[in-house]
Image (cartoon, rainbow, N blue to C red; front, side, top):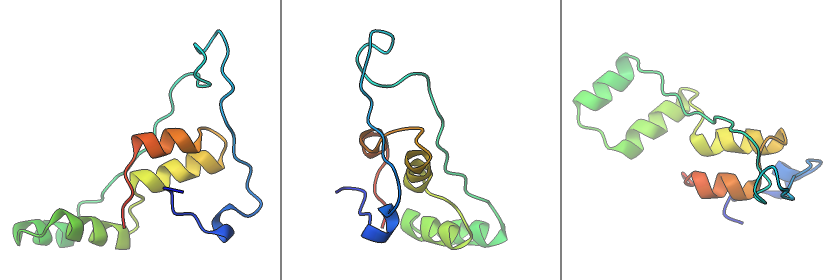
Length: 96
């Protein structure tokens, strides 16, 4: 699966799938839910940018500082039953 989940990641969790109806035009989705990726900009991040660090280095540093990626935020929405696996795979990219 594209989410690269391990057995321990999904053990005991319930996953939902949209059925579709007239109200949702057969999509199985109703309304919108935001998922977010917020990077805290601190002195260390500023220094990395000033040094010309690559995007990968910036993201890695931000994640070490507690940033949750868009994909991780999407996984939490899946686990909470707010959206489906298909929607998160479609709308986010896998980060290593």
